Length: 73
Image (cartoon, rainbow, N blue to C red; front, side, top):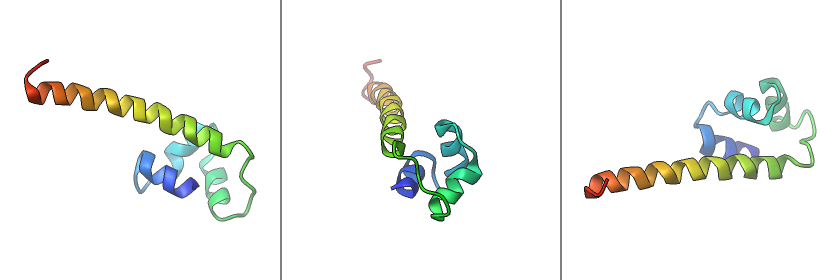
């Protein structure tokens, strides 16, 4: 779940930017991925929040570009 969300949000170099947005170190994220440390119980909710925020921004950009393409600025 962590890796999939991270890659969708930030691409192949996702660990550092996701760590920043979660307010943890990139080492913490790497430890979660390697199962060296247990993920926090609220990680799914935190990931969902970031995903929803990013999707809202993406929808704004999509709408803007679509208007530009159709000539209805």
